[in-house]
Length: 69
Image 1 (cartoon, rainbow, N blue to C red):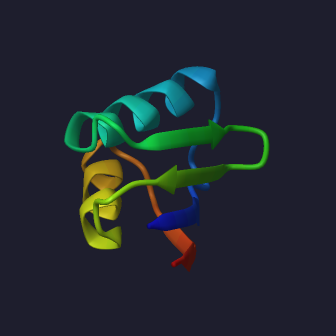
Image 2 (cartoon, one colour):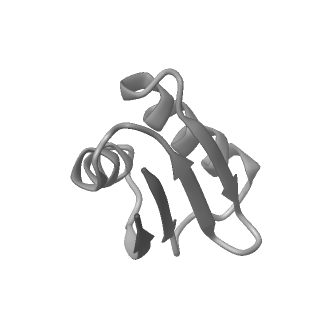
Image 3 (cartoon, rainbow, N blue to C red):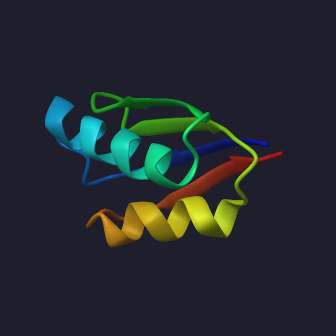
């Protein structure tokens, strides 16, 4: 499943790394990119949207869903 979402409070590369690490902790084979400039996170994983959102929220970030397919 391809999921794209905005994380408005992702401010720097360390934030992006924290988000990627959190997602890969529950989905080790996920392809994850996080761009602090555009605040966009793209995930290609078998995990569902709610699981991905929950782990990012638990890492301390806000998730605004844009696209999930």
